[in-house]
Amino acid sequence: MGATARMPRNANLDDLAQRYAGAQAALEATSNYYHIHDTLSEHLDVTVAHPKELNQIADTDKKTDRVDAKELARMVRLNSVPESYVPTDEVREARALVRGRQTLVENRTKYANKIHGLLSDHGITEEVKPLNKEGREFLRELSLPTPWDSLLESYIELIETLTEEIQSLDETIEERAGSLKETQSLMTIPGVSYYTALTIYAELGEIDRFDGDKEVVSYVGLNPVIRESGDSRIEGSISKRGFGRVRWLLVQAAHTAVHTCNDEYLSRFYERLASRKNSQKAIVATARKMLVSIYHMLDRGEVYDPPGVSA
Figure 1 (cartoon, rainbow, N blue to C red):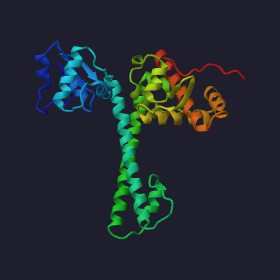
Figure 2 (figure 1 turned 30 degrees about the horizontal axis):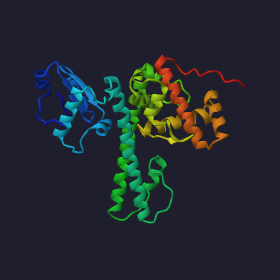
Figure 3 (figure 1 turned 120 degrees about the horizontal axis):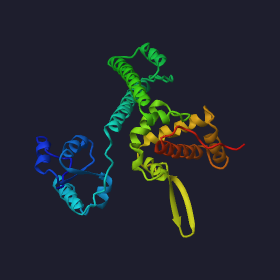
Figure 4 (figure 1 turned 30 degrees about the vertical axis):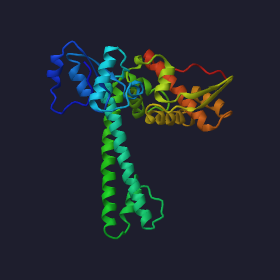
C-alpha cells in the first residue's frame, strides 16, 4: 500500500488503517504528517519518505497526488523508500516550543522593521530600537500625522504583546530544558543556555539515529565542502545544510565560550586557528568542534568534560 499525506479532508484514517491492517504504507514528511503517521501506525507498518530525497530519485517529472502515491507504492514494493526521521513525542514537543518561539521573534522583528520604515518615510533619522523599553518610550513621544500615528501605536502594542508572549514561552522552555537529561547535560557547556540546549536537542532528535559525529556535523550543515580535482584537495565554505537556526546558535555559543567564559579547551582551539585564518572561519570551526563534543556527550550520556590542554 502506498499513500501520501495529501489525503481528502473527510478520509477516515482509522478505518483505512484497519481495512489494510498489517500492510505497508508510505507517506511524505510534509508539514502535517504527524497525525497521519500516528493514526496509520496503529495498524500499519508506516514508512515516512524524505521529500527532497524522494524528488531526487523519483522516476517522473510529473507532480500530482496520484503520481506521487503510485511512486511511493512502487518504492514500498522495492523496499527503496528514502526514509525520514520520525521524532518521538518528547522531541516533537521540544520542537514545537523552540520553533514557536522563533516564529514569535520573527514576527516581532517584522513589526520593528515596519517602524523603521515608517520613521524613514517621515524623515526621522534618530537611531531608535523599538525592541527595548526606552526605544518605545521615545516612539510614543513622536507626533506623526494621521493615519501614521495610529499605525505606529499599533506596531508598538504588537511588539509589546509579542515580547510578553516570548517571555512567557521562555519560562516554559527553561522549565522543559531543566527537566530533560539531554538538555541538562548540554547546559554544562560554557555558552549553552537553556534555549540553545533545547533547540539542539529538538532539532537533532534521538542521537542514536546518527552514525558518528561526522554525520551530525553534516546534518547541521557545519561540514566544509571538499572540492577535489586531480591531485588538489580544497576545503571550501560550510555546506549550510539543515536548520540555519542551529548553526547560528552554535556559533553564538562558541563566541560566548571563547570570548566570555574563556573555556580553555575551545579557546585554545579558536586561537590556534585564528592565528592562521580569519576570525569568522575560526569561530565556525570552533562551533563545529563544540558540536562534535555535543554528539559524544549525548551518545555517552555525559556532561561537558573536555580533555586537558597542556600549557
